[in-house]
Image (cartoon, rainbow, N blue to C red):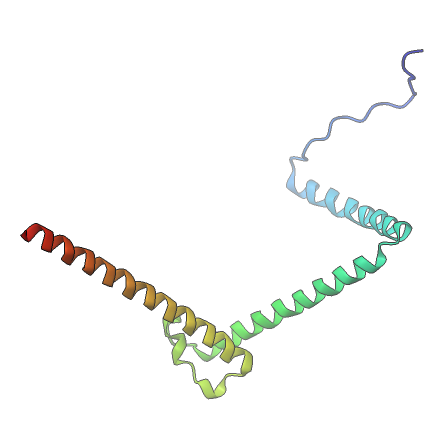
Length: 137
């Protein structure tokens, strides 16, 4: 008896479902059962503490993203009517602390960008003038 055969039919090979709506329906049906099995496995293995910690981190990050989006909308509302390039013209008195920090970050990035541009131009002029001096010799 080399191999034991069972009466069940082998599963057909796995392949992607072509019809997008059928694929989404199948996914949504299977997702809940997979989550249930994963939950059971977590309980059996005693990994609930880590899951709770990860869920808490997820919730904190989600809330942080929501707050950032709200701040972005508020800043956009304050600069409405002005071009996006004129974000620095927002009325500072009307901004809250988080919006001020966001504006500070944008200003610091602008400052770094200006320094880079100045350095590039300065280096370009210096190399151009030294090449010009060499040509004169």
